[in-house]
Length: 345
Image 1 (cartoon, rainbow, N blue to C red):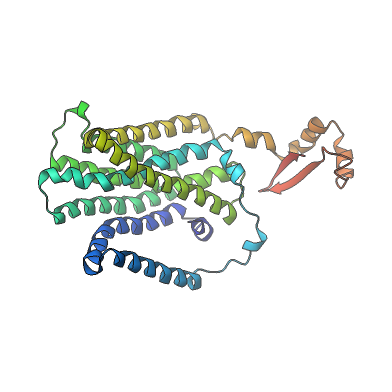
Image 2 (cartoon, rainbow, N blue to C red):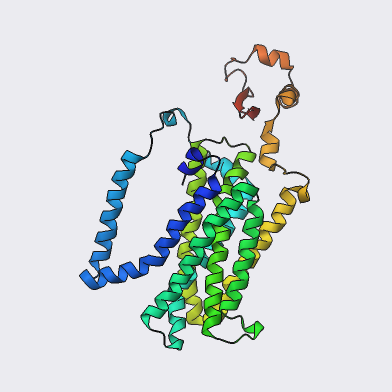
């Protein structure tokens, strides 16, 4: 994932959408293929087959991916800087909820469909439609994100639609909807379309947020952002089936689905409120307090030095190489993206 903005800087959203196509295909054929392998060779064969295939792919990637001779010259990305940007927390929390919602259906939907006396093939068809919904929406949303540069709008719309679809699929008891197979099918297909809209532009939004707030647009930053994305998604993928199973055992599918629907609506509300504050209701995007404190323009550098050290800027320039033991408050200047970062020892 870290290679996407490095190799495709002008089409991050569309490339991520294309990647999600294969993620959707994997979600679609994975259960079916696993069942076939299990019937052919027992419990061990699916793991041996997938593990061996993964090793072959790793070797192929080693020779296919182009080398980057400048990687050794770059510093590692700053995870502390990443964590200090409020915009990342809002989007990462929403990603956690989205991943949990995406995987909630895995252990619960098949049990819920048993009341309709469906055959295994018919149950598999429902899961197939879910995967197709995600596969179709992801590349379209990625293309829109690249063309319109409106990731926050797409995130908000996706989580709102996902929340509504969960309330329909349950259905939420407050709505007094009939518990019919067609209604559950429409709800779950719509929710995977919505989650494709919500999850696909997340990585692109995180990248634009951290670069806007001062982190360099290099592969070291991409790697740190990718690590945070995958951590949140993996944690949500663990939370969704675990909490979903517990809620269904404690209550029922309708209540459990409604809870996840409300969580998606809360995520959408959080994104909307924070975005209105961050973008000043359309008047321009603000930077975080961390960046405002430590990053200034070249024009303000001398004034900041005088305020922080109580010395004349000319004397500072003449004594840039002074020993740290003699001047503990030495100012270090680091050029970054055309701006000057000031840090006080």
